[in-house]
Amino acid sequence: MDSGLLRPEVGVVSHVPTSFVWPKEYLVDANGELQAPVVDLDGFLRGDEEATQCAAKLIREACSNHGFFQVINHGVDSCLIREAHHQMDTFFKLPIHRKLSVHKTPGSMWGYSGAHAHRFSSQLPWKETLSFPYHDNTSEHVVTNYFKSTIGEDFEQAGVIFQKYCDGMKQLGLKLTELLAISLGADRLHFRELFSDGCSIMRCNNYPSCQQPNLTLGTGPHCDPTSITILHQDLVGGLDVFADNQWKTVPPRLDALVVNIGDTFMALSNGRYKSCVHRAVVNKYKERKSLAFFLCPKEDKVLRAPDEVVSMDGTKHYPDFTWSHFLHFTQNHYRADQATLPNFINWFLSSKTTN
Image 1 (cartoon, rainbow, N blue to C red):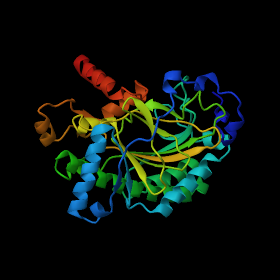
Image 2: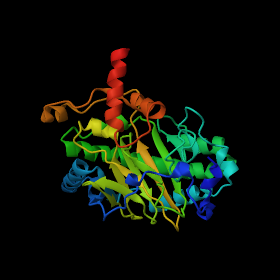
Image 3: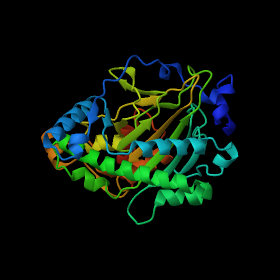
Image 4: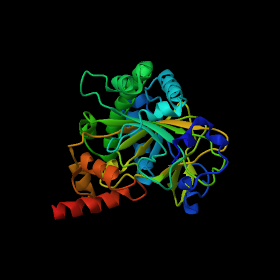
């Protein structure tokens, strides 16, 4: 693939290359907006018990249905979010040779990717990404150092901004684990303790405009293998969720963050909460950008649903596994799609049998 196809001026390309064309069944237009609640976190973050129970109820209903909701008054500074978008814009406007100098290498999750062409050769997504790790387990500012050492000294300030952004996302993510635990009837701190020392994933997404948006996708239909995704999207729109057997749009709000359940948390909820299929469509006239933070547990921690949840359900629906096992599966054996979790479970159980 010519990585130059995914420069900002990609709109001048008159025909979508064959490697970017998706089957027609994946390209059906969305029909209306997703009925996802907008959860006001102000009362919960202030410690108001009534507001906390109200937020937990809204989240329970959304996650039992399709796994998507939006949050407002979430505590992450709007100026910081705008600055993160600005720094993302600056990176994606770099000459292609500069971006490729930090491209993902085989076996690594970190760096620049043009359409994931380093891993796949067909049904490529019409996007470019920058992915980097985040954790707060040491005094080292891992994001600041990543930008400075990997992208260059001129991106040190970008690293500072994204370090602060990830700090905010991590703190919000941990608070959301408390709400999720409450909504499931588990101990409030059960999941917080599981995720507090994990290494999470930060990804910047750029979806260039496309002259034939009816042929390709910015991201194909998939469920997130991770646990909890916190997304901020610009006002262009393009996030679709498959619910009630049809595609529904998630309208963008600058003051809101979109939260969705991933496969790993679906297993942690014993299957109560849904990791829903979603995709990103592209726009003929405008590029679209988004910031995605994927909250992950520590790789070697055993993942299992809380005992009280399993007890209430009467059956344990998933075997114990680690995030390391699941991550290895998605990075080496499987391209994330609508059936990643069941296919992982089958692979995991068969690999245990043969070892």
